[in-house]
Length: 180
Image (cartoon, rainbow, N blue to C red; front, top):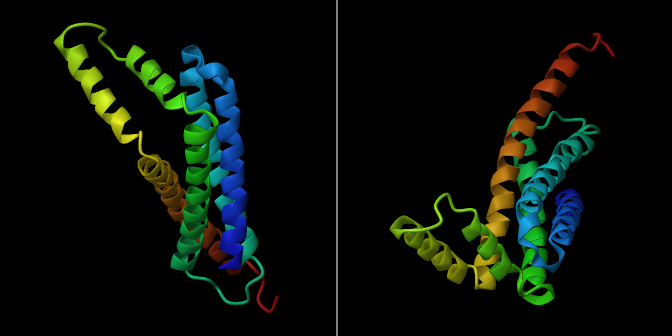
């Protein structure tokens, strides 16, 4: 459990640094940079969650017993859960305390990217976006959505990383000379 918290804190900190870096890109809530910042944020999230693979290797490399596939996956999910909580808390602090105008600016950017810019379909899309904006006016919803995003990506990384690590260590163990 201590290892999960340690690695989760590391992953959460790295994700938060990427998030802050992407928010610096939109300093002053400039709409022209929002798309690039959004991509940078997701790339940073995936890159940070890739640390789970390194953590898995470090955690299980010295164990005398052969950890199961499920132990590896649960380890990765624990890291992702911890990182998701840290990241979501930092995002809530940023969007509600440090830069309270961010959500309005982001939704204005989002509306500007809609595929149609006039007519009844546009009005419907704007109404849907504004309903989402109202939902995101609640810190709890921002926390849950951001944490869930990390958890979902972390689940995929944990399963794929767990499978890869399990079969890599299994083949490595099978290729060791007898008696050594």
